[in-house]
Image (cartoon, rainbow, N blue to C red; front, side, top):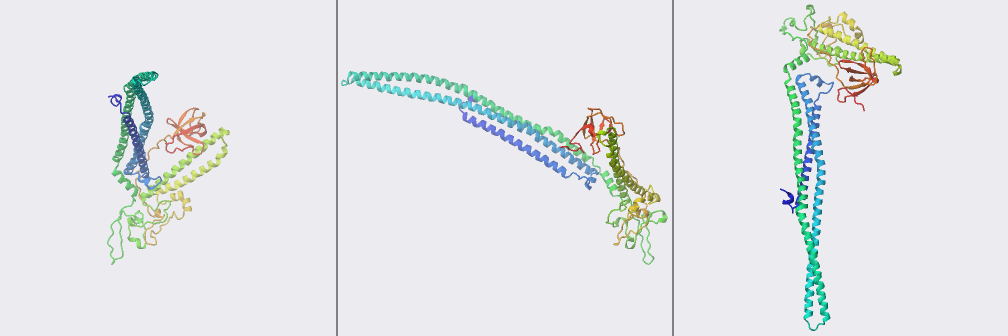
Amino acid sequence: MSWGIELWDQFDNLEKHTQWGIDILEKYIKFVKERTEIELSYAKQLRNLAKKYQPKKNSKEEEEYRYTACKAFLSTLNEMNDYAGQHEVISENMTSHITVELARYVQELKQERKSYFHDGRKAQQHIEICWKQLESSKRRFERDCKEADRAQQYFEKMDADINVTKADVEKARQQAQVRHQMAEDSRADYSSILQKFNHEQHEYYHTHIPNIFQKIQEMEERRILRIGESMKTYAEVDRQVIPIIGKCLDEIVKAAESIDQKNDSQLVIEAYKSGFEPPGDIEFEDYTQPMKRTVSDNSLSNSRGEGKPELKFGGKSKGKLWPFIKKNKGAAPEDFSNLPPEQRRKRLQQKVDDLNKEIQKEMDQRDAITKMKDVYLKNPQMGDPASLDHKLTEVSQNIEKLRLEAQKFEAWLAEVEGRLPARSDQARRQSGMYEAQNPTTVNNCAQDRESPDGSYTEEQSQESEVKVLATDFDDEFDDEEPLPAIGTCKALYTFEGQNEGTISVVEGETLYVIEEDKGDGWTRIRRNEEEGYVPTSYVEVYLDKNAKGAKTYI
């Protein structure tokens, strides 16, 4: 099966067919290119969708994600990001392995096809020139033969005419001989050109054209094979990401299976439990007798004489019960006394934890400044130690202020948890300075709980009137996990960390960075399990851009 033999006379059709083959290849390239654009668009939409439903930082939504169902949803959003990444991988691989490669191949194919058909046209032109030469020699031979016949006939006519002179007869005879010789010469030339043409034509149809058409056939078969290989690659690119996509889906299923409805129900209790006991039965009030009302033993309005706190209601609010009482819509007190006991305890504990974190942060800053001052004292050329005194004093004042604030909230927390008597002298001594600063916040006398519209209002004096029974504090705190590495650093100089909190490094040593320089001139690093600070000027830092908390330097 050879195009050179079977299609020796189909030059123009082969030219059209090979151009059609290139058009098909370019159409496939366009198809793959549009597929990559769709994959990128789909990945972008998936990422935007996942980002849209991510909880906003420092918002109520972020608090909701402690429920297992919300955590599973958050895991789903994170997996959707990875899922989108795989579609980006599909687009990238199809572009590099198919689109770019085929586009380059098409250009090479066009040049190769152009070369082959140029050679074919050149061979056609040569055979056409040979044919024209043959036709010209043939016409000349035919013309000379006719002229020779006419000259011969004219000579015979002159020779038979008795009236013609001998000289005229001789002239006609010579003319006939000349014409005859010209015809013979034309005959020989025609024969030679015919033989040459037959040879060229044989070479054209049996050598040149078959060779050119064979090359074109091979070129076309390579094109067909190449588009088939590209289609396999197209499928393999998809197949390669299937395991990772499967893992993403498996993680989503795993997250869904981790949902614990009982745990979520317990979290609802912890979030909204007031700590109050349900009200007791209300006795029948006989208006023929003085009004009498009794309350169950576990009510919050038992008499003080029985050792239990008493809630005072006035005027129209005497018949109202705790769950249905209107709360004051004014600004919330500093000690959260407007909240039910359990919720108040949780808020106070959260406030104490936040303050302790701020204290620790300030202490870290103070330690860093102290270390830097020591470095300046040992190496005056690095800076003036006295320039840090003002900052050190400011940080120390902040620490003391935060400690006093933390003590105040710890005292309130102790009251709620029952570790101290309600608003005892000891508590007053601990927070007396705050009572002087906030007279409206701390009140040692009982106040009516009735607002002008008859609704219940919770005043700060609740602590002196109501002693809340201690509740179990179930929050557990895990050991602090080590900070993740956000990059690496290379020691430019040797540093002997002799002070507490510092770490020694040797010039040229590579270590992990776990905390950037916060403006105090110190960088926190890790070597295996050992952590400490080194002067920032002693190391060259290479931050990981993808690490959480890492800054970007331009």
